[in-house]
Image (tube, rainbow, N blue to C red; front, side, top):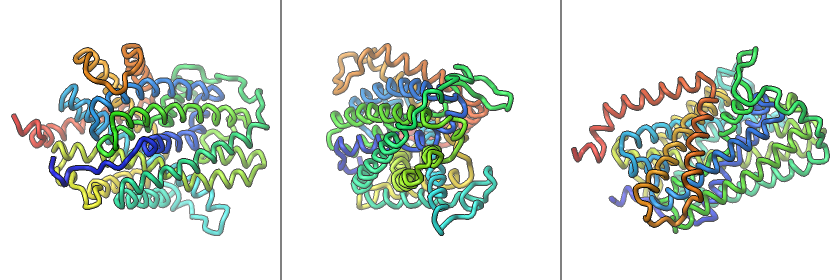
Length: 455
C-alpha cells in the first residue's frame, strides 16, 4: 500500500470504547426519546429494548468480522472481501447515506439544545438562523457551525480527536446520571398507563403519522448504532484483533444499561405527552419538574458533549469514503492523507455534504432515512459472518459470536422487520438512493475500480 494511502496506528481499546459510547449515547437518548414517545407512548421503553437487542446481535457479528478482517471500511470492506464488489458498493453507498445523515441529524439535535441554552442568555439566535426551511427558518446555522468545528478537529489529528472525545464522553455520561438522580424521586407509575396506546406493530394514526412500538423502534434504532464506527478504525487500532472486539461489545453493553435507566426515569417523572417531539426532551422534563438548575446543566452538557457523536460518525463517514476511494470506486485522489496521517480531502468533502443536509432538513426525517442505510449494512455484516462460518469454519477468529446461526439470523430478520416498520416514504427514498448508486457504479466504479481494472 502506498505511504500516502496508509493510516497511522494510534488508538487503544479505551479510545475505541469511548469512541463507541460517544457515538451511541447522544441524539438518540437526548432528543429522539421524544419522537419515540410520540409514536409508542410509555411502551417506548419496549421499543428501546427491541432495537437494542437487534443491535446487540448485529454488534456481535461486527465484532467477529472486525477481528477476522481488521481493515478500515467496516461493512463495506467485509462485503467486498466475502461477497464481492457489487454488493460491497451497495453496502458502501448505504453507509454513505447512514453516516452522512447521522452526522446531520446529531448536528440538528445539538442545535436544538444549543438554541435552548442560548435562549437563557443574551446570545439567543433568531429562529430563522436556528431552523431549516421545513421548520420555518432559513438555515440551521448552529448545525453547520458544529460540523465545521468537528471537521477541523479531525483534520488536525485522529489521536488528538479521540482523546478529546474520551473526555467529553465522561461529561455526557455524568449528565445522564444526574438526570436519573434528579428525576427518580418524581417517579410515578401512573405515567406508564396505558402502556401501549398505539399497539405493537406499525399502524397509521388518523393524523396520518405511523405509530406503534415497532414504528418507534424503527426510528430510535438510531439511538443504538454507533459501534460500527469503531470497526472503521481497524487500521488505526494498535492491536485490532483484541481492541476491536473489546470496543464494540463493551460500548454496546454500557449504552444499553444507560438507555434503559434514562428512558424509565424520563417517562416515570412526566407524562410522555408533555415532552413528545420536543427538540430537547430531557431538559424540558427537568424544567417541568421545577429543576431549572439541573435543566441548564443538562443542556450545557449536551451542547458540550453531543459533538462526540458527530465526531465518531464523521470519523466513520470519512473512512468509508477513504476506503472506497482507495479501491477506486470513488476518485482515488480523495484517498490521499496529510503529513499528520489524516485524510484531509475526504474530510472536507464529507463536511460539505453533511453541512448542507443539516442546514436544511428536520431531525425525524433525517433519522428515519439514516436508519434505512444502517439496517442494510447490519444485514450485510450478519450475512457475511454466517457465510464465513460456512466457508471457513476453522479460520482463526479472535472473537467468536456465541450461537452464531441464532444470533446472525435474528439480526437479519430483526433488521428487515425494522426496515418494514420505517415510514413508507423513507423506504421509497432509500430505494431511489440505491438505484442512483447502482447507476453511478455502472458508469464509474465498475470501470475504474481495482477489480474492474483487472478485467
